[in-house]
Length: 143
Image 1: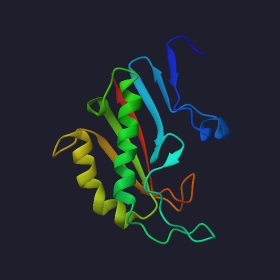
Image 2 (image 1 turned 135 degrees about the vertical axis):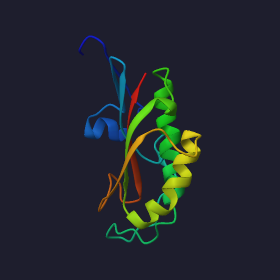
Image 3 (image 1 turned 90 degrees about the vertical axis):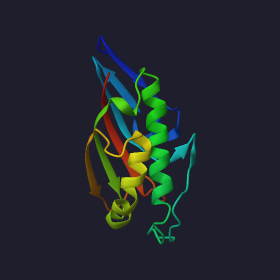
Image 4 (image 1 turned 120 degrees about the horizontal axis):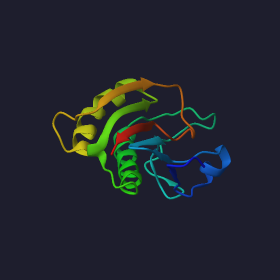
């Protein structure tokens, strides 16, 4: 490992299977891998899917997005940081209309401000790591 680089894991099987760290601190910057809706190895508010993996209901988008920020906060705390230190985020959503409808409220709540001081991009995607996932949030923080 490079001098000054620090990594953090959540000890979930997909870290080992895919091969990545949940967060990397380097200098005064913390890079978080895309955070998804889980508590330990269990998905939180998984979306219902058809046998072919197609999502049939996007109503869990809000609950999943909230859990993404909870997980991000936990990781940032390991670096002595918080969501207040986030400077950039990318929010990936499987259904852009639903994501757009819930993101404002969820983000304002997560950041504790009516005008979060963070650069933000929302991207609609065809799918995420697991078929039941509707949201993934990638963050960069400066501490």
